[in-house]
Amino acid sequence: MRLSKRSKFEELVQEVQSIKQAVAPKQPPPPASLGQLPLPPVPPPPPHLPSPRAVDQPRLYAATPSFPAGTSPLSSIPSFSTAPPPRTVLETSSGPGLASPAQMTTPSSTSGRTSQPRALKSKVFSGQDIDHYFDRYFEHCHPYFPIVRIREPDAVYNSGPVLFWAIVVTACRTSSHAGGVFELLADAVKKEVWESVSDPPVSLATINALLILSVWPLPTIRFVKDPSPMYVSLLMNSCYLLGIHTGRGDYPAHTYPAYRLSVSNEEAVYSWIGYNIISQRVSTYSGTPSTGQFFNRTIESVLDGTSPVQIPTHFHVLLESAAYLHRVGGIMAANIEGGNGVSHLVVQQLEEDFQKVQMLMSRDISDAAEVDRFTILSTLQEIQLFYFMPMPGFSPEIFKRNALRCHTTAQSVVRLALKLQSDIGFLSHAPHFVCRSVLTAACILISAFLSPSLKDVIERHTRECGGTPDMVVGEALACVRYCSIQEGDLPVRTAKMMESAWHVRDVLPPTEISHADFIHRMGMGLPLDCIRRWKRQMEQIRPDKVSPSVPAPGAGAGAGAGGADLQAGAAGAGAAGGGGGGGAGGADLLATDPFSRIDWEAFMKDFDWNFDPNLMDTVVA
Image (cartoon, rainbow, N blue to C red; front, side, top):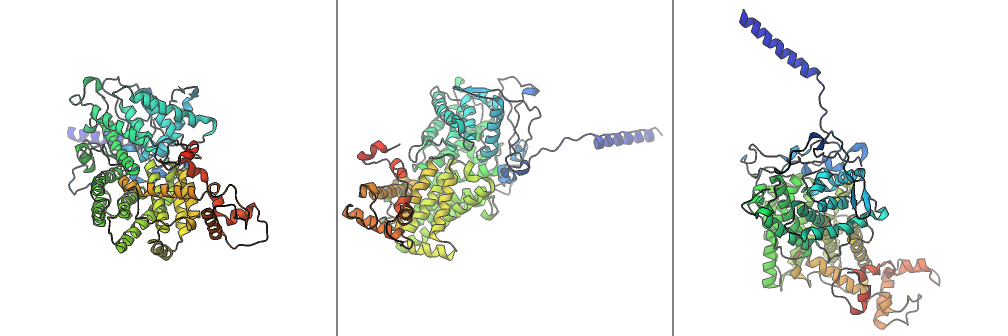
């Protein structure tokens, strides 16, 4: 009888508990899929710091509702939040203690505490302004390169002011530049960086600041005047000195006692991965062999899924691509140095090997997220670029076939970038190496159309695909312009220069794409050669070099012989139907003279390092 009563009592207790759970107010689900970017968990504070109070916990910011219904287009892309599939059938990455990126969709803290105001030079930024800038950074930029693991502005500032201001200036890239705030930030951050690195050892915050400024450089850079390679060299030494390459946040056996970091392992791993990615990308678009890569056991454990720290799929694809490009760079540097060119057989073998690497990233490229497909296609483009550096005595037919393949890849890169720009504003916020990939694709497309040996086959293939040369080049130039963040920056100047060269292509001297002068710059050799050649050719046909003033229609006697021929040819090539009465006005001149559409300033100020001494006063380096 007692057992029966006890059993009934236990059943009654369970029933009461069930009722409580049913009627208790539930916490609202975290808005991970609406308006919240994939944010990784905030790491614990360093051991030497006291635990923060509940009201001081770093808060994770919700995305600013910049899109309809408060949704962010990036939040719908799983590649920014989910881990990649395992590389083998063994469940080596499913053990206890693994931090899955799926947990990165942490909701905002309920504290809602406004950040403290900060001052930079004569400008005071309110707490609301700082919160807004941090919201923009973690919404639009952070998913592409998630190296910053602390979200709370005050905590970031305490870790290192240079990182704080690097985040703010990066967030301001696509904001309104009224009032000179962006210019003030850009000027101050450059000084903050050099002050921070001048007193070693640098902190992890300074390392992350240099990474951010290498991924999203300031718009004051030029084509061959970019501080990113210098930043990368500083980063290499700093990472080794602090033991970050070990993947451990506190490794006293590796460093001097005064150099101990005491940060989390997650912070160390993400920073080391970020360094390896951006170091290789900078090496690729600067055209120099990479000397800073160290794809060690820490990187290998992340790639094969055995590391206790997992990363989002997009970050994983970037790392896989960087590791493979590091191998390609070493092989190509040796081939170019030894044979003054690259055999197409070597490039084909590297292409085939990269297809196997793609299997590690995605079983089928069509199944990968579009942002990951762009990374894969742009990496393939970097490999195929070496088809344009053939060995002496190459087969013209084989060269045409390989050039067509690279041309098709470049067109795919451009069109996918335009689609991503339409969907998620990709080109407006993506890292700078994306802009360089698009710029390289544009150079490939234009150069192939201008090459006498490739022009016919490329144009025929383009028309078979339902396009025209003007359409293909127009898409490429639009793609480059979308990378611009302010007037007069590198994408704008580059697009103007390429557009000008395309408009007068019929009067430019024919140049074979296979006759490159800068093969020692490896993958960057083709863009450098194209831009430098177009610049010099355009300077030779500048109207003020041909004649002191633009002659009236029918009057060309004042021009030099060669210049008169060039201008006459240009007018004939640019005329759309001729005609109309005597005394052509300004509109008629614009319609018949293609030189009137050229931005000569772009040619005078950029894209070369060997200038005519007479023009040095006009050069803006």
